[in-house]
Length: 111
Length: 114
Image 1: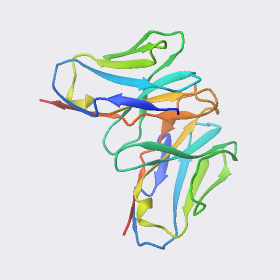
Image 2: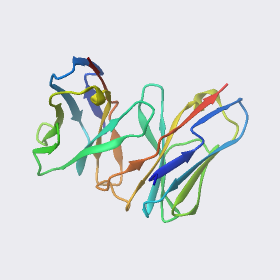
Image 3: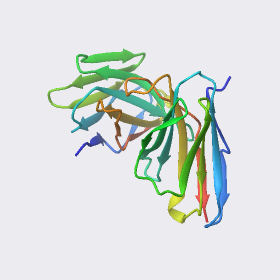
Image 4: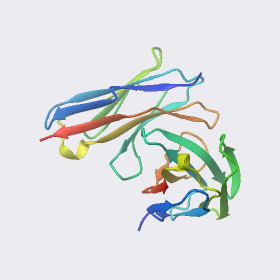
């Protein structure tokens, strides 16, 4: 069964600290993996997309990694800011026009 | 210069009523989607249209009927609303069909059925 699991479910960190969010998937076949950020009361916005051959991709203070062998991805946030408080959603594309969404991680950055 | 817009933003209605949510994108995209996000923030795709043609129809009650008058608009009509329909509904669009293409989401419509 195609599944995407994210951990932790929620996380509180102090402003300026780093954090890492995890995404494990059992989706097959695998085409690509995308991380979205969803601010409260708004729609998700894409942060990065990673294909099978990519191990690391950065977007400012956000760095995503992908290990296609272990079917794991992580999103690392450096020097967190209050505006990073949001839900982060991992989405895996199977290649059959099917997207499998994770349940998300809620991040709260505290001053 | 809003990319994907939805109306209304909030919708409160009684059980059994019929309601519609409208979506418009000005990005020139070919593909549009409707998602439902439940109270646990889990996003689930409902429908997808490509150039006004239905291409994805997940297991959704037939009380939900999407309509795409042109490729810039995808509306969602819901008949006989039930309590379980309460959720946030997101419209999205992508330049073409296919999971590699980034989806741009609207601000969401929070539907509350009383």
